[in-house]
Image 1 (cartoon, one colour):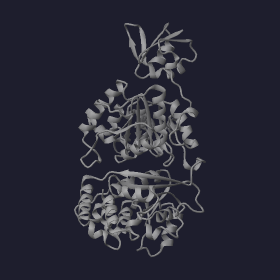
Image 2 (cartoon, rainbow, N blue to C red):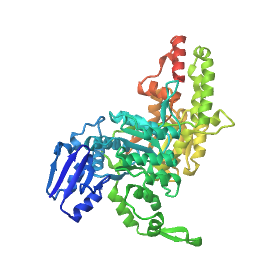
Image 3 (cartoon, rainbow, N blue to C red):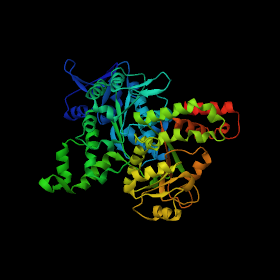
Length: 546
């Protein structure tokens, strides 16, 4: 018989010696042996899971908190803040049963929501104190902050974030991030980027809080960005252990078996070194025998992956809506931010003149182009957070054998996107294109062409582009109807799956104001175009610049 005494946050486990029970306890995170009391000690929050492991033994629980201390939750009784699709309920159930797994759903199926719901449920079930979210892509911190607010009632903190004198949230130094980890804030969800793990002090502070039981769950988003186990980030990630770990990736990792090593290792399903792993699954040869010339034992690797991965494709999910809209935030570099600020100050200085012009919107084009790519406005600086993120999204889509449609308001931007994505043999339609049908057919009917790029004015109407499953807007038009018309190039007769609509937005810029005015509120700011008072026009322009 097993006797468990609950005292405060600890559960003391005693039993007559049984090696099977010992092995079960050794497999529990944060367990320890109390030599004085001659018993095993585990956190109370783990008691529910431990009792599941003791299902074939007689167990007695003593103490002020008896079995009421063991919290359980059924998926049907969990109060989702936002209604889940059926496949998300299944992902939620899967995540409650597994402490460590890879959520490999295709882009657009809501990996973020599922992992947030799982984290909230685990807090309710086991008293988790904090969940750490590590973003493999830097700008996605803001997306996670927004998603946490949308899908939960929990507080959220981006590590190192502070409110500046203008009332805006900004990310400060690594030292500030370390301070937030050492002095944990009153927020369940903690968010940081994987680059912060380059600091040994940061990793040590995180791991200390994990060992103290203060950080109980870690979500690693875009884990395929850390596929190199010899890199500084890869080595650091492997030091972040965690009681519960969820890895997220929409990219099929079997394209290169070596990419799986860090996923399996971080989740705790691979005990061998990288080189032993490589030698087991790779055939080495070439000069000096250091080149991978083939693979072996891939059926074993696939079987291991299937045991720890949940992956669904859009084509296999039946309850999705016709369109899935996502606003994805990106962070401008210091150089890009400086150019944006200079243009903004120039416009603000001339705001009265702009307000009396026939079309004030035209006066804001330079500001919007500053969020697009700096070399449109500057010969000295060539940076674009949006194009950087675009490349990452397209790479993931191509890995999933999908095509995409890319829109911008300006030819200057579509030309730059075309150059960045040249390896995918893109088609392009702008006002300069002589044969739009030929470019349409290239995208629709040739396998080498993975994307089509065009201006909203030239490609937003009159074309059928149903080969694309994702539509990406590098910038939105001023008019909501124009955007919906552009979206429908992919969503029309002949569409066989849900269409993802992704809009890239630079954080704390005019992009955000446009999305709020035009798309969230569902209407254009009429005072800018319909002859309202000059004073109102000036106020609206000032708001867009804020």
